[in-house]
Length: 201
Image (cartoon, rainbow, N blue to C red; front, side, top):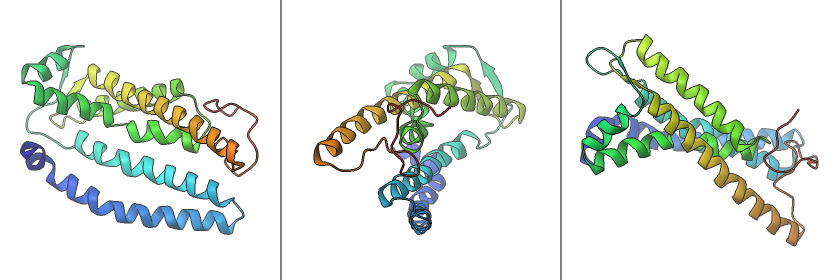
């Protein structure tokens, strides 16, 4: 934990302070949608999801794109994981766990905001991660472009999307039993005719 603080204190402090700003933005977005006739539960759900995706992803992007001394380099598949585990269990947990969390906010909240399947979330995260890894190498910022990171980033988003879908179904079932609004409601309050997790056409 001491090493994490030493390396990323600025990111942690700014991210913590940014939570207040994120809350304010979500409040403003929800209020604006409600004024335009969007049902209150839909306005809040969509606003919180949108802000949460940004607030939960930007700190990781900041860390990923922070320059390090020396040239950037590419490592072959599995070499990065071997190196992580070679430096001890604590380092492996930090590296692997961090990579799983990079797009976890997007993975969990995207199905809340849009009707999108976990497989689509996984694909989007994989493409975004590939762009990041390629950028690290092209910009020569002293980072390691690692294929393993793409796999872990995408896996984290996919797992988060699966968790969100299970939670949404449970909440939807509870609301149906109590006569409340379904979480599968269309993005502007119209009843959804598609199952949770399906995509718009």
